[in-house]
Length: 213
Image (tube, rainbow, N blue to C red; front, top):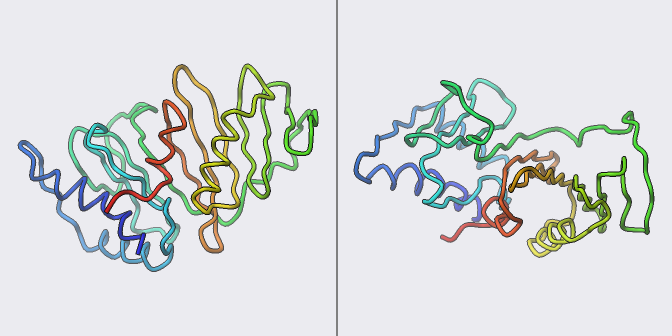
């Protein structure tokens, strides 16, 4: 099952990499093992439950709360491979590698005041600086100095459709040399809210693709 590939993050990143010189062993407590069992049972074989792992990323700290019934976790860049129940120390925004939270439904934006200029059936410009591009049940928003340019939104749509993801909402926020991605994708009767940062959209395959077995 594809879900097992998601746990290669732990098997590869935490277990195997602990064998490297200077790495510290991670003890898996019973609460984590129970949490992981529940994740596999409830989320099924969706490719975007966990991201792939690249050695160049360096050590990651998995943060999860076993006391809550709501599924969610974050991965932070760290000095060593860890599994923690809370984030310790001061962390900068760019230290977060990945965030996944299961929510009941998409955020309600109906009360938000938006100036909309409809360009065609697929494209609209919101508040003069946001591109809204829709293909079927996928909508991609991008904050941009060139609103109306669908190059990046089209890349996202093509990627999702090529991976049999036919519905969702994605927000692209351009920063200095990087792009923050906030994606809302279906998982059973819920929605996964995923947050990560890329240098270019070719990196989507790291966070939304199935890693090699």
